[in-house]
Length: 376
Image (tube, rainbow, N blue to C red; front, side):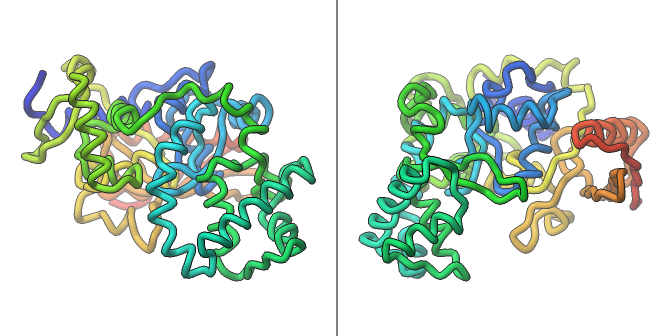
């Protein structure tokens, strides 16, 4: 087992765990999502592009079918109390593992919105009844109208409605269903949507969660794990101690910082593989960019505000595991305009790989594209 990793080795392991170096198999889409412990899905368009970056040749239609038809992928509130796309087999155990902490952390904000414990419990009951009576996916407005008809009126101009829906998801009642044609989110009874206990085969407990995180994000610190998951510092330490006790973890240092690494990960640090350059166009709020409390290995201090600012996480040009610029795209008629702004001049190899990535974004979105690289 290695005692110390270089920055390059650390990034190599992280991108490998995130399927950003060697793509996952599109035939087993749910298995790929499971290996990632979910994909951030706060923004649907970014969720799709995050999977494109990790699954070579994946079709947007295949992801939509996995969500809406066979329901092997599910959107619900999980890590940090935010919306993630999860493998259906992971939903029950993952939400139940995180929910006690996330509900406790959210109680103050719920109270500020007028949702005390009694009202929240009553609201969840009314949501359950509305979804059962209508027997179809309902939007936020439709759920709130149903609650108003039962005497629970929440101000739609505040965050109270979505916080109540989030609370209902964390209790295990609901998850997100198919979007309406206009892109509006809907909600469904979770057990009816994915089959209840028959899908709950993902794992259990904090130690399992810690190992799953490190398999995907290592090397990482206890603080990284706590931030990513939303657990308390004490819970994160307990989880990692449990994984260490099973003999699955070892400590390593990266830039003099102590981190955790699964024992199995050290075996893949092949010099020949380390020399291969990797470039990816990651979307806004990408899971890789949100997976660490300390982001110094991802983005230099000089450019941190170019990536993280105002509550936003911008789309990033990732070169060998580090942010080398930002990018954006927009539809212009029947074409896609992709603009890349590197932080420093890209070498010929990286420029060529950026062009290949832009072509694949165009393939995925079904439009021909033009690429413009601006900057140094």
